[in-house]
Image 1 (cartoon, rainbow, N blue to C red):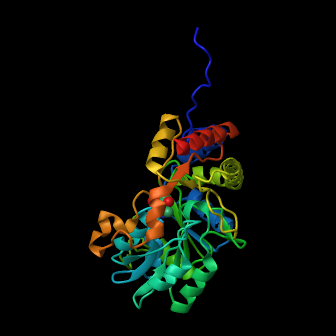
Image 2 (tube, rainbow, N blue to C red; image 1 turned 45 degrees about the horizontal axis):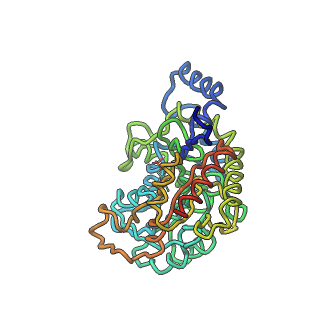
Image 3 (cartoon, rainbow, N blue to C red; image 1 turned 180 degrees about the horizontal axis):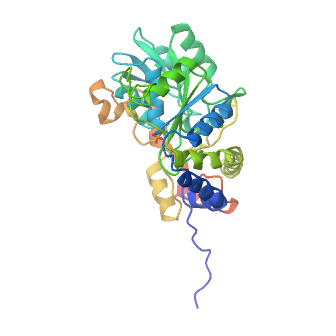
Length: 376
Ligand SMILES: *Cc1c(COP(=O)(O)O)cnc(C)c1O
């Protein structure tokens, strides 16, 4: 007879189904009401969600668009960014942060991050400012706000726009202020894996400026406020009614889900903090982190990741290659060594399973597997 061994568990990086089962009835009812109404583009659900997101973020206006990437492109454009302008961005982020800038014919200029939070370092931003700089894009990476006060002071002193990439951080705060509410515009993604994820692509731009909101409404519809009367080059970039209806159901639970993520992060911390080979995520202490990711740093990360996979634990590397070293920007002449903190983060970062429904048992299993993997 086979002896009973501790059964191998399998822990996914993200479990959307675990969340869906808790809201299934409400989501289906919301979808049904859109189907009954047969109004699919820019109707009452989008308008209601725009109002709810604006209220949630504590800003005056919100404009639904087709994705977080489009939120960045349209947000930058609405701030006047165009060909020849320089925009300061981190190199340690998802490519969309930078390629939204280059999609407008502007040039992303890469600044360095802080080694503990892996967020943009205001000191490095100061060094990257030139006479052509027009904007800064702070990315609230992994769900924690960038240290905004020095960044906003720099922007003010140099007359620069601030476009917050809030794709990973809706619900996080900085000194009592909501992420996305501090810059000229805040750009939100509703990609399914984000803290507030739809069941498809979606995004939103928030702003306190009525003028900017008006421009965004025009840019998402071919540069026209009045139908069939275009004032400028625009896009077709709209959030659709089905996604808005689903997101309205989910927004009501966002705070509760973000708290569950924080509790999970606390549990990870307690189990990992005494292991000198594992660096737990740094907190800047300026506000609430919403743990879109729980990202540790380890040596020999690729080998550790492989051992975890063999043990049934899925992890992801956000992000393996700094943007200044990716082929898309090869013509800028970025070289290894240009941004050493960014490059070392790319070598060491490892995001562990994180979602509001993760169980204590799953976290303990991941931590056991990780401690063994770094020892091997
Ligand atoms: C997800 C993400 C985006 C892009 O959002 P999409 O909705 O996928 O287009 C932009 N920036 C960051 C930091 C992201 O994580």
